[in-house]
Length: 409
Image 1 (cartoon, rainbow, N blue to C red):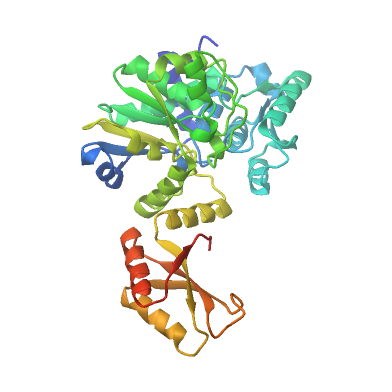
Image 2: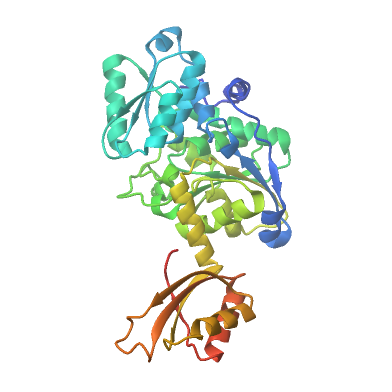
């Protein structure tokens, strides 16, 4: 693998991937620039969520497959993935007209299975988790002679991912900091290694979820370690063990590695949708959530948005949680006598402070004496925390004694 992760290889990869990728130009974010670094930092987004397969993975897969020998192409490739890498390999193999076998866990959502099949790949469902699928992919590789294209622990794949950094440097030569999501470490390896080859002063900071911080643990131990579990809503980076082959590159070239709680990803999703009108999956939002952790000022910062493949059910849940966390939606319980006019009185109080009622639930059985009290649960929309407090204060002053109830819509 000595031919990979060199400047010549990165230059070759950057030209080669153009055959299969779209040009994801940097987007200057006035919103994030204003929000973080006291408004002194300039924040740019690298929108890999706009790639042809919805994620950066197409880069590494395409370049790695381009380097196969004629004999290897005749036999084909195999990989294990439940997400973006599966589609990347399938798409790349289709471009070269070669066989691709993708092993996916049996728990993989049907839409992802069908998308991978639609790209021309053979899908094998095996095991409950990625590790089971990976073992089956290795067995198929041995038994059938297919070349294994690892999702991250492959220098060739990492070199292809590094084409992102090449594009960043061409578009923003004076970039100071690059934030890169970390799962197994393939993307971070390519970006950080190329950055240090071209511009050693540029800082490359890895960002991973708190619930799957395998690289942080490994860097602290000075060797590759395996976490007991990987629990995070950033499923694309829910990896228990970073790549052992690429670990030396990560250790030598990353300047730092930050960890992000899931709650911050929820907020970042809301910010991205409302201010940039883009859908970015939770793993891709790691670098956006990391912006508030940066201590420096007057820097040009690029956040790599690694992908945008998020199912609508997850999307709905994340939006709701974000709105609730920011006090823009909340539910309040009030007790009132069961007699005509009380509901109108409550509605009038809320309307008087510009609250917007989303849902009402009337419970007549909260006590045995309905004339004494029935419960009314009101789900409201507010502008934020201050407005929420104004609504609660108005209800309290009118004698309704509001009680905030934690609930989902």
